Amino acid sequence: MSIMAIFKNCYEHFRGKFSKQYMPAQSPKMHSKKKVLVLDLDETLVHCEFKENNSFQHEALLKVNHKGQEYKIYLRTRPHLNQFLIEASRDYEIIIFTAGYEVYCEKVLAFIDNNRLISDYYARGSCQFINGVCFKDLSLLDRPMEDIIFIDNNPNAFDRCQENGLLIPSYLDSDDDDCLLRLIPFLKYLSKKKDLRPIAQHLHQFENNIGTTLFSENQKSLEIQQEAMDEDTLSEGNVVKKDNDITDLDIKHKKTQTHLEVVSKVSNKIRSATLFSG
Ligand SMILES: [Mg+2]
Image 1 (cartoon, rainbow, N blue to C red):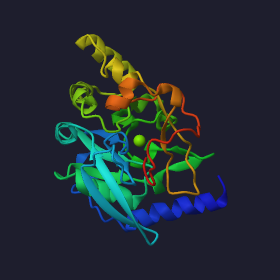
Image 2 (image 1 turned 120 degrees about the vertical axis):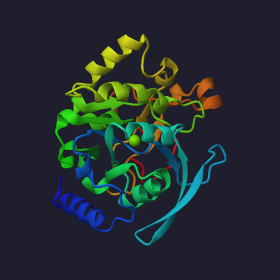
Image 3 (image 1 turned 45 degrees about the vertical axis):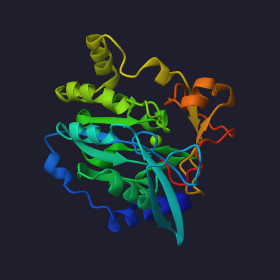
């Protein structure tokens, strides 16, 4: 990482820490006896677009200023998000870790966290960028790693915390998406474990118990890829879809999709012209 990149990361980190517009309702330390649920934001809890799009039914239009420019955020929350946060907060301290910029993160959280259930957030300034790829370092949370489950739609995010990671299918805009609903009983099951690691092993046991997989096969059937991070732009990397993966089913329903393979940089069709997403 270049000196300039390190300086930019430090600047964004401290600027974010001291200029938070969205103040979490609860001090993280108050939750020290709870397990810790770390959640990615974009395509995990919400999907946002930054240009009006007739094929995208947005739920809210938010506005954010960044470096003197106003951006419009067309936001849609993942189905069952409110219920998910309420249920998960019974057993977990909830922390957001996104590669989106701080101002964007704050604006989105102010909209989705009506019940003030999210205890803290880490945004782009807290991410590490190596060769254009974003890494989310869970050691920043200062919690025992055995107490942490980290849910993200981007497998790159788990690079340094494989045992804590749970990959969730990406959410774009499907009304039928029930991934968050499906996660609730698993999180309840997992919360009773002394050590949450490795998540994959606990998930395997849970799926054996219930006799099915956590996420349905059609949710896993399509593949999307994500461009590598670009430090010189506002974007984490656009969610993109390989042309040969666009199916009739996808066109009709824009089904929730997932990453199935290692993410690589591609330059074909861009599904979402995001500026901040992570
Ligand atoms: Mg994401």
